[in-house]
Length: 252
Image (cartoon, one colour):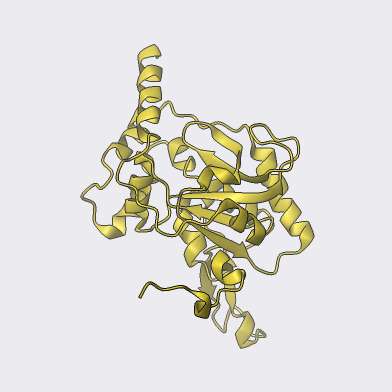
């Protein structure tokens, strides 16, 4: 047991260490991000850890991490009161609050849930705040070992399923699963399964209500799903702040 614990901790340290070949290309200043972000937004991050490389490859996406923006911190550990704050889950620390400035040097994308009421936004934030302190059972070393090969020779159609291999606890450390649960708690869709009702099942339905949304299990969600979801808007800070290409100063 002692040896397994030591090996697990060593694996976590290795997987969460930074890679040397990360290249930021669309970094937004934290002050600019703060001016655009709204409570309940999902911030996607192109991480620079070894674990991030594996997640990006397996999900065929730029994004390896997701965090929920909860606004100004009030009584949260690790974040000064009043600082713009995210709640996230990571491999080493479980669910924690972190300052927005943590991702000042990484590529990010804002995904905004549309049509939420203020009460629903508060419910999503409360769900994540109540999750702070949750830890993940990392006792199954083989679950972590799958990420030691960042680009395994697996056919594209099987890569996502590789994330669900094993006991499932380190799989849930992929941050998007807890955020997915938060939105599912208010019945907000991300990428639901859509079932078409037959005329026999819905004789009196109009064409517009012959679709039924069925919730996918939260463990199947990855950061990429918020990006491609038709129910989340993509918010780009430069454009939101009034971009005008006529004001650019090009070198002749």
